[in-house]
Image (tube, rainbow, N blue to C red; front, side, top):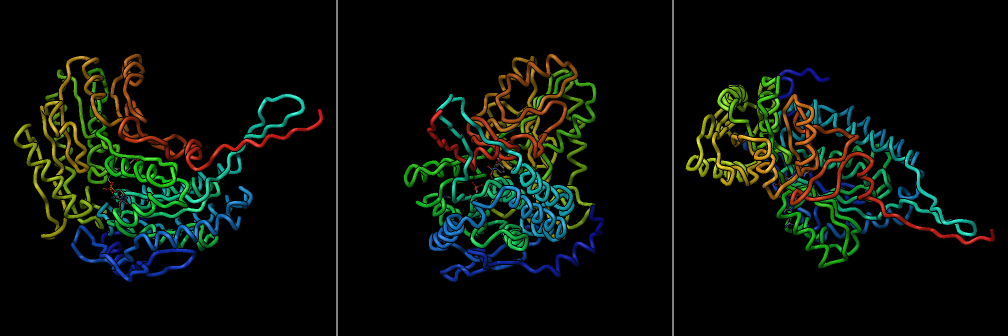
Length: 498
Ligand code: NAD
């Protein structure tokens, strides 16, 4: 556990060196065009680094390097137990560079450095470790075909995996995709979000230091419509793992259909409901967690509990608890361990959040927040904001805002709560608070969501699959099920004289 003061983090930030070139074929290289784009710290507006702006030509180079590495067998044909040793070393290297990894994400996208140092960076190390430890414990199958026939059903890596990730958890999203894909023996070409490419570039260097052979893990920073699209349309990419918005997830399905029918696994948006029943005994914890569910990471969480349904008999008191918690979560300098909330990723996202808030002021009752905030007179910050008595059909309750904005909606019966919770295009996560066991099971059973958390929010671990239903996408990250995305089942049928 790092115990740095505000001054410590600031001086470490000042001394930090950034990798700003693409990592292709085991080397840091400029974009072929020579172009760069600025990576900006949203808390201060300062430019951190000019980063290589990769486009289709660089994507092609990276895919060629990845394919060559795959075909060479240097990684793909390495014994799983040997791949495990390398990936465990990578996990150790992330731990050894924890403060740096945390700072890169904090500076690049505005999250609290203490969250990055206690949740994101240790999480990345843990996810690499978990997938590494799993990979030499997965057995394949012998089919029950009978004498004279031996039919082996084995999992084989797919080849070249493209990964396109968002900016809200830069290091962890890069890890969720690449840990399982690499453990399974694939080569990876990762395009991180243009808002936050720095930690992925450092991860590439650590991967090489751990012993991942050249060409096996490539990182190409760049924009979505150029580099992202080129990866999605590439004829020699076998699988495209995507996390981001529903709109762009749909585009990747189109790219696949218009190119080589590569597998596409979209993990997309959400508008997750949190249901508070009056029979929940610990309403203080429910309120603490409901606030965490929407204000953690500035609300920039795909599974953020942005719709809060509260049983009418307790709603007034519960709203008061939520207001108190929101007011105690004001944004501050992301590098200050005393800050409760960080900066929004960039000016565009901040404007989008504020547009939704301004529209909400016309249709619902603003009970706290509702304005931009500044730290030392600058930066992209938004006050924690709560609207009460939101109409279930209001855009506030239907559209993903991806910021610290909570909509509270009363309900009168269990059936009504379930119906409203499920009446959404999304189905990523849901939470239920009750001390009635039958109700907990009955409601969880009916909620359409990839993860239902009972008496907690956003339950997540390496051991359990994470992903959505409906337009929150499909495919699962984490757990042994994540290997399903990155492997194909192959049948080898052998005839013999019985
Ligand atoms: P986004 O969809 O705008 O971008 C995600 C990635 O796609 C980025 O790398 C971007 O460069 C790329 N991209 C953008 N346009 C593209 C195009 N035309 N072609 C190819 N690639 C393109 O999403 P974002 O704003 O970075 O992230 C926020 C979204 O991510 C939210 O909707 C959030 O819910 C979602 N998200 C989902 C999960 C999950 O696991 N389901 C996790 C985190 C974030």
